[in-house]
Image (tube, rainbow, N blue to C red):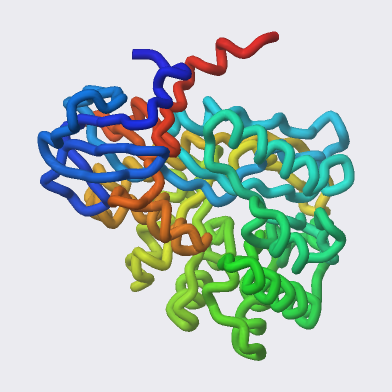
Length: 394
């Protein structure tokens, strides 16, 4: 079967080989109604005459569609001038990896690109079927916003679920001081409360020697709870990863590992090795998430901080490193899925609708083959097929 408007029937019945919700279920049928999971079971019976599409995938395993909380949806880059701006991401490239939900970020360049650009792209991805959200802000402090005020962005823009990525311990950051960080996080917290959102602050960690000290100071010196701040790129260097383990254990905080596209497999800074090391240091699996940094830049700087070149990040390493964690039994499937689905949903405040296959949850489903390779991705019950990219008008 191919993707198309016909896949968006009001009622859809998926028949699969196995279901991990994330825990393994006896059920093999998933009934989808109006974009949500209505029921799970075996040999579900539907009243005769109901408008329904039945899709048979008996050789595939259904899991919660993956959630990538760090995607440069409009493209990152720009550190080497306008000719080094990265391209936008496409819905097909997201769905091909089994990802159903993304959170858009800006990054270094908030001059030629803006939160308004991110919002437009997020809404475009939603129109194509992807569940897309965004962080307001960028690397710099004070951060650019949509409405001129962080609290209003959180309160009035449904797609805005937090602030990010604010750069710390990086030569490209605004070198924010402790009081500036505390003010930003507190503003986001209140704005999120008014909107009924989690309102996390997503912090980019650079190579600087200060590492996580700005966030440790924030949590020690203020009343801000640890679940308000998420440090990412914590596997950038060995010392930072060790610091991230201590940070998580001290505060009960979640840390985000980046699946760097130029650090696959056995590379010392790969997401596979980073997750394995964090677990070995005693960090609970439910305090670790993984993200891709997709369509962001991977710049290289010389010893004096001068730009020397770059590559564009993809999202293939996110999938391949996750697959390896399962194949090598670093984590069982049900715990490994949390790294890119359930735990991420909790961090973002989306756990009431995403990250699980259960009645009442969004019908965001990835169908995996025996090699853990995504074959189909459903978002709100609608199948998003990679082939749709080829059908776009020139």
